[in-house]
Length: 446
Image (cartoon, rainbow, N blue to C red; front, side):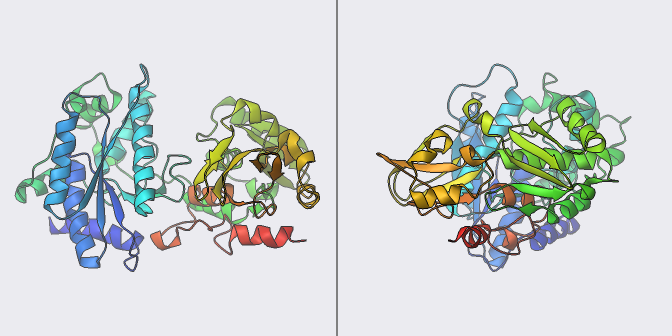
């Protein structure tokens, strides 16, 4: 059992900043995996001088969910951890409930972590979860995605600048329960885990079959992470948030890695939460091989191949068919607009696309706007106050600052952020050479 604890603590030491005063969040369901992680993480946090904040999402899908939530809270408080309950409110979908519940869980956890000042959320996923995911993919069922020890939150934009750490990925579920029994710790069992109606329950039953070779399915998967990181380091971030890369960098690479990079670059440029898949992505790869210059729309992004460069920007024509609706902010409030810009307001105002309002800008702001490529000008954020229209800093000198999110999002997705101390709102896709906002201010200075 000591070996189990040592492996988990080694992962915490490898990824977390012991000098930080910020809390570490932990997703606590009350099940055996998360309960084992709670006790392991609290011991580590106490010795390292970090605070542990346990977060329990109450999906309100089972009559006993309130009791489960109370059980988790009591367990966290009993060992000295902070704790919060996070209810999933509102109507639940009639179809696709497991996927919707996962999305809501990550969103709630990310929001709570951000409010507490935490940049890392611990999850109790085990080697069995890796194997179950492999079985679910073979069945064609939605999964948790490729489980990695360290990865950005899948919730967008709620999960921006938030990372997930899974220190138990090489530990079997049975070993955790054996350890809990030895320590005389209780845990809960969700009856849905045994209901073959759900794909994960079917995978769990198959995993327990003597005929199933779990050792094969549990092997870690190489997602081309080193190649993705190398590509991300070659991305150039233009003054108004466009991303570009030399087409030669994508040559001679295997299709899955190229496809994943193109999908991530597209959603980082467009602000959408989910990457494109299937035929549209394949057609883009085919055109990159066959054609010299072309422009195509994909997942809300305008992808232009011009000479040696491939660039990604927001497709302005998609603005009316997206969630880029106006956002009203009070002074001091922060919100994400269009999935691409984090706006912090200095005064009461409304954020919306420049679109047809460019003529109402001041002469200075119009001059700065003209420096942006014509194709992306309509999709940039503007600040509306009564009859005034201004550009936020650093694009203009209006009463708000806009932090572009496309570059740090791509940086995180491609694996350039490997440690808690590297998580920063100013991290760039180029590996953190300098602050993106500072670079923009310099580039756009009169």
